[in-house]
Length: 423
Image 1 (cartoon, rainbow, N blue to C red):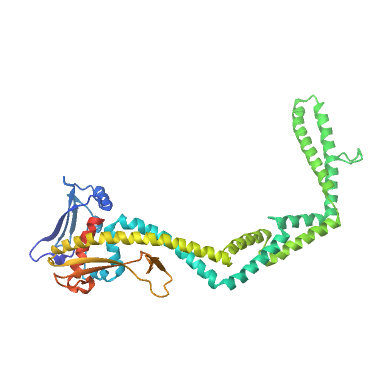
Image 2 (cartoon, rainbow, N blue to C red; image 1 turned 90 degrees about the vertical axis):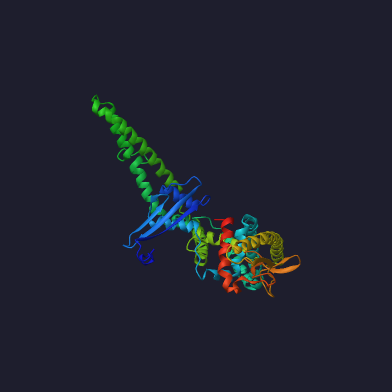
């Protein structure tokens, strides 16, 4: 809205429109949030004005609103066409989109099913092609994976086993030092094993202290006795555990040699496959999964080919359903566009909408057999849709994009028809 648009001698320019918007969710939200007054027939009046001094005003339903509100509302309700908009009709995909929008769920539902099956069908074709063309390479990779799994299974490592072995080796290698330390600690806690009264240990000393406090007549000292009893129980537990630890220490050289040999086996695996045993086990799990997808045997290839053919049958059925729905909608779409053209000074013109299955070219990897014919299974079905314009009775039907003088009006007529089909 520029000031230059105001006619000379006038104070302002304005444009006003009455809109119905029922069922357009975005428009309903905008009108409600702006607090606009809605007329009894469910319509609302929008107004935009620009004055010669540059000030701009916007109103919706009698309420002053920011200009952006009207801009947002117009995006929901108005299709604006410029000189180049008709170029969209040059693209076959746009012409197919026109009939799909017009048909609505009649095309949308089978098309979604078609697209889901097509994605799975293409994945199976790609896997079958890869396994067939890379069978030698995949067989070599499979041999390497099998060799690795055989080597790992022969050792049969357990999760975290390398860490446990390291600790066990440390104990076995230092068994004499550990036994001396544990034995001395045990004597310090429990006393001399031969009952030497000169080495009573912590338990003996605590017992003596407990005896003296228990026989005291002083209340304060007697209150300390229960805490000494707790200390005595704790020392007794520690002494028992130290005694058990000393008994479990084994200086058997054969056991140490066996553990070292086991550690060497695990290190051979960690040098080849991962940094630790847990990583080796993860590599093995991944290798098994990869082997499942590398089966290049005739049985595996035959199973994939069977799955491909089964999906092709399902895909053909969905494609045929989509084509039938498009053909059903074609006649109604053509009639409605033709009717709109009569209001655009093209009373003698008529639109035809053709729906034809696109033949598959030689070597097409996405070819699909329907009714004995090989057609191209594209992402939006197997159909080519074309809009033809017959300028007047007796004139040959021509693609709409070749009728340059009429193409923009045809585009407008299509938008009006589609506005009735969806918002």
